[in-house]
Length: 465
Image (cartoon, rainbow, N blue to C red; front, side):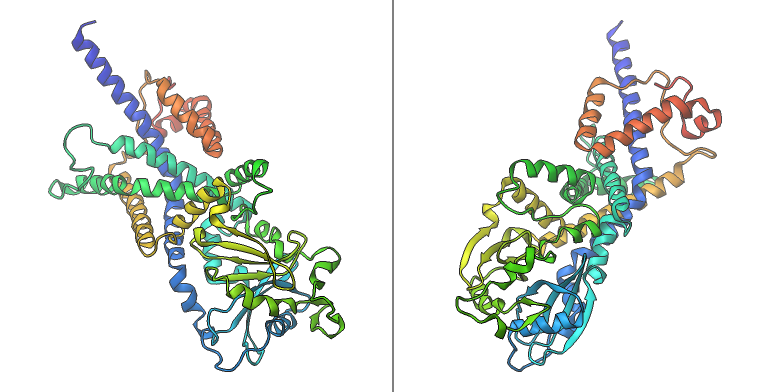
């Protein structure tokens, strides 16, 4: 074979492989685009949680100028407002004028009660999962479909990762010209405009989008559940996992503070010699130790919001923990009923895996280095929306009549070993992606190419391999 023939053969094979990767990119986009638009929209809203949440609850920001009643009395008022409930957590007030937030547990439900700290008047009662930002959170993570929705979102996120990686390969410049990759060419007509809008946006956004997708996987049902099992094998005894997986109902069930201690004995810790008959209690449970704990916890200067929880079957002592969105700021302390600090755990003391995921989640929520983190999140979300819209426009304008418009594959095209290896590796790291890719390949290879109309519509050849 002459050098020229060899060169032509290599060029032809390169084009065939390019079309093969383009076909997987097309399939990924076909499935992902509606989900990406949904996730980008809900994620964009959730990015502004620090600004929106106080705005939505502004009527509880200034409710009193008088002296506050003891925290135990405020808790008692909240529990009376929700019959049959127990204390979940008491949110340490950040302002003496603001309403006190008390989270109470009723079975698997967590309910937030707003109490006037001076008059003990209940100002509002709302299920925690009904709060606006919580609804957005579950719309984003599980489409309000529980475990099924979580699996769908995880599957869409996995295919989006494939879509971004194949897109970077397809659009990466193969010559010295950067036009159409790093900046759009604005004088080449509408066809080039939409092509460049898609490719240039992808070039700038893909790395940020991949980071967001990977950092969101620990919350997912399948991948996150496997990660949780892995973590439990070596770090279960060192610290409590600081993130949850699965559906909203499953998250509610694992809330340690919502589980009563065995026989309620831990709830009755008290100062030596104290007469428990004189202590204010609700349903036989004594919450007066919190009055001694509040000044101790406040003196620790833990990043707000600080949640103070009574003992439970999962925690033998009172705990005070930061629930800051910036997870590296979180600290947890354990106290006995006298106010003595028994143990303090800072973020830096957590296992390495927990710290990596903590940083990832904080970045995902735009909380690690605000406001720049929020700006990058907005940039990425808008970029993903732009890519989806431009992809849909390109497909609609270029699609041949009567067919789907998937890039056709030649009869001679075979998967290179390197590509097979990369797809296999990606399928192992992202099992749902691997399983679904195998199903797509088998369906095309064994079924669809045998039906003439379907084969024509999908751009398959009878001898596709």
